[in-house]
Image (cartoon, rainbow, N blue to C red):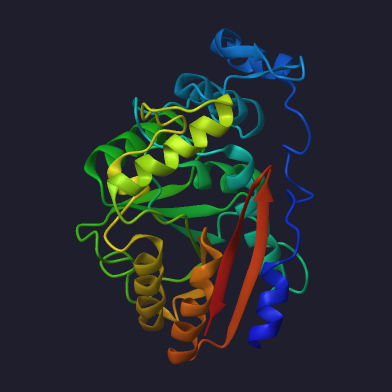
Length: 305
């Protein structure tokens, strides 16, 4: 793909996907019926409207629980205190975008059912991508995790949601992505990933203080992760840039295993570097697909051989 075309795509205005169930305001009354605890965390926003206290990590977790119980056919969902609690609308968007990507290789029809196997790299304690993918399209998943506590909790979620077709695999070497996970002749339709963004704990905390200050409309000096997140979920050595470079380089060895490799890219300035790496490894096709929710914009990088 030519560089100028990629730039044009990455600058397109991103909105929630047309099939996303979370377009528009939340129906808080319906959500409270699904998860009554959410009622404790409803506030009046600056416009005088009923809303959720997004600066409160407990409120965010209860909102996620309500959304997953109400929309995505789970019997139980929870995460330990302090773990990453990702915004559900954005995670749903990723799944819908991947579905469209797979449709282009399937005569324009979205492939559905458990024969469509996806790889979720770093599923975390929340396991949100497999939950949404299974509910929306009936897909099956291989879900990887390198942190023991997250792996154990994801195992707990599977035990309490028998309808999920997910195989959890522990990644012994956190510096590896596909190695030690995919078997030699194992076939998957797509890999998905939301990599750790920051290069250090300090950088993660500084970014969090800035976000909380914006949410509250005043300066915040105490670190409180409103969306949670353990160290391995928020930062890693080299941050997003090094993680995705490693992913691209490793993907060459698994070119015959996977139709499409994808990942979220939070920092658009990293795309030039990824483009050079993908050119070096002779990727056959590369796409940059914009996605966004509210004031946050990111993009999905997808490639195949």
